[in-house]
Amino acid sequence: QEYTAIKMEVVQWSDAAAKEIEGKVGGRKVYLVAATLRPETMYGQTNCFVGTQIKYGVFAANEKEAYVCTYRAARNMAFQGIFDVRGQVNQLLEIDGTKIVGAKIRAPFSVYPEVYVLPMDNVLATKGTGVVTSVPSDSPDDYATLMDLRKKADFYKIDPSWASFDPVPVLSTPAYGEMTAPALVKQLKIQSQKDVKQLAEAKEIAYKEGFYNGTMLIGDFKGQPVQEAKNKVRATMIEKGVAFAYAEPEGLIVSRSA
Ligand code: ZZB
Image (cartoon, rainbow, N blue to C red):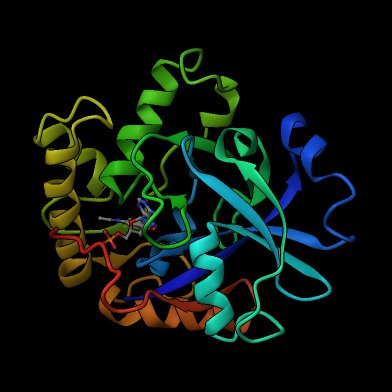
């Protein structure tokens, strides 16, 4: 599985994270690294998700940068030559997902330059980097979770303002218009992020519809079919240094249909 890893620079830590991180990163810039299969949707990022049950590491990529992701992902990155010493994982510290919630980060290519880290129940520690960037216009999981957080900010222990960024039209599809994920959530009567079965179905439909029938509404490739724009957006992000290629080793993939 070939992902695009999106580098989301931390602009301001939550208080809880600041305490743990202080003095441990050697002056490096720290980035949350999110693995996505949909680089063409990055214009519509409204936040980023971490799992509250997941332990993350802060890993030195080189002298200047450190990445936040699972240990498993860091190990893969090390073997893919993403860190300066191939095969070597240099963990600077470990931190609970809950403590990262509330951090303010830069979302590259998003219409919202700075967004917040929010909690999601269904983040898998075994897939991607364990960090998920959120595009509620086109990802049913992201939309359902964002609505949960807005409805129950207290329960999820977040400041309501962190979840206040509205979904952005990124691509249009003949079947669902400019907001594929909200349309599917409604059609399949999905109530919350806990409706995992219907969400898996919605995700499958959204992927297919977006990929085969979507047209870009925003960005340098506006007006182009998603099939053509996808790799162009990816290449542009990599060229600008805000993303890199990240592959998931065969055999360890938690496949979409599993
Ligand atoms: C942004 C995005 C925008 C995504 C979209 C999807 C969609 P798959 O197909 O199952 O491999 N993701 C990545 N890592 C995790 C994780 N550890 N736990 C839970 N979700 C994760 O899923 C790949 C997609 O699932 C990734 O692409 C990421 O969300 C999320 F408009 O990134 B995506 C219809 C989907 N639309």
